Image (tube, rainbow, N blue to C red):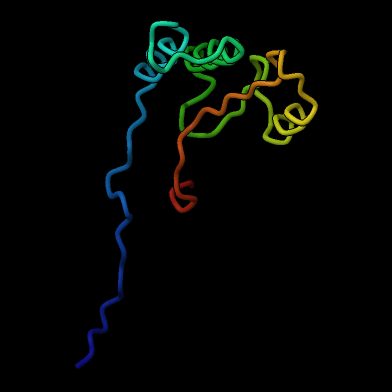
Length: 108
């Protein structure tokens, strides 16, 4: 006799990852330290400081993607537009993407 029970599948990662905002803020601060191995170029400092402030103000959660150009949140399209019109010697040319990757099925 054939098995008639419905087939169910479990997610690839059954326990959702937890995002630690405070740990991320500490990590971002380290990117501003010239002695840190993950030090980021000066041109990114405006964006990194903006991301830190956005976390502190609760305006971003670290899960949804945000694009930061010149210290402000912009759309993906705006980030692309500014990149195409960039002057590599100005901060406006640098984009910071913050957020985690997740499967579309996880997003509700």
